[in-house]
Length: 302
Image: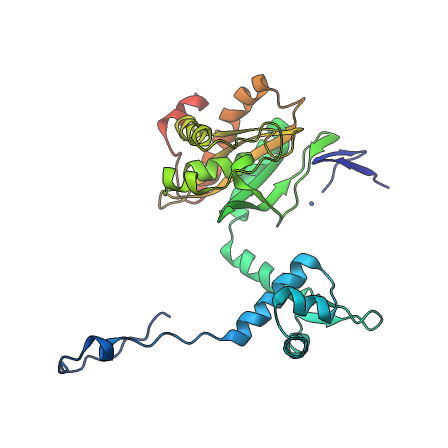
C-alpha cells in the first residue's frame, strides 16, 4: 500500500507514482450599385441554446455535482430553462443525476470525447522518448505543456524517480508567467513584448515577478538563453527549468521541462539542467521536423 503526503506542490511518497469554411457561391453577373445600408451583411445567428448548454457543462466540470438552483444561479438562467437543458444533456449522456441527492454532474462522456480529440492531435507520443530520456538522466519530474491563453495546460508528465517530488496533474493548468514551461512559451510567443505586457502579474509566492518591466526583462533573457527558470515563483518550494519545442513550421507550440524541490534544483544545478532540457526539446522537435529556436541554446549544449 502506498502512502503519499503532499505539502504545497511537493509530494513525499514511499514508492514512485505511475499519473465554415464558407460555401463558395457561384459567380453572378455584377449587380447595380446599392446603398451602404442595403449592402450591409446580416449578422450571423448564434445558437443561444447550445451556448447555454456548454456553460452548464463547463460549470459541472469545474465545480462538480451541483443542485438545480445553484446551476441556474451560477449560469444566470431560469430554473425552468436550466432543467430543460439538463434533461437534454442527460438524454445525450453528458450529464447524470444522482437518485439520492438529485444533484447533477458531468459524466465520463466528456472525458471520452476529449480523449479521442486529444489522441487525434497526437501531440504527446512524438515527445515520449525525449521525456523518458530526460526523466532518466535527471531523475526529476518531467512535464510537457502547451500555452492556452495565459495559462499552461499539462499534456503529459513522468514522475520523478526520487521519493520527494514535485506534483502536477495531467489536464491541470497553471499561471503561465510563473512556471518554467509557461515562461518559455510566453517568451517565444510571436506576439512578443505587447503580449508580455498584457499579462496580469499576480503574486503567488515571494519570488513571483509582478513588476511588468522586470517580467519583460526576464522574457528577453529567457529568449536569448533558450530556456527558462522558475525560481519558486508559483509554489515557493518548487523550482523548474523548461525549453521550447519547435514544430516543422518553426513555431513554438509546446514546452518540455523538469521540476523538483528547491533543495535539489539549486541555482548551481539549474545551470546544469538547462542544457539537458534544451537537448530533450531538440530531440522532441526532431520528431516534428523542427529544430532549436536559437544558436544560444545550441551552444549551451556544447
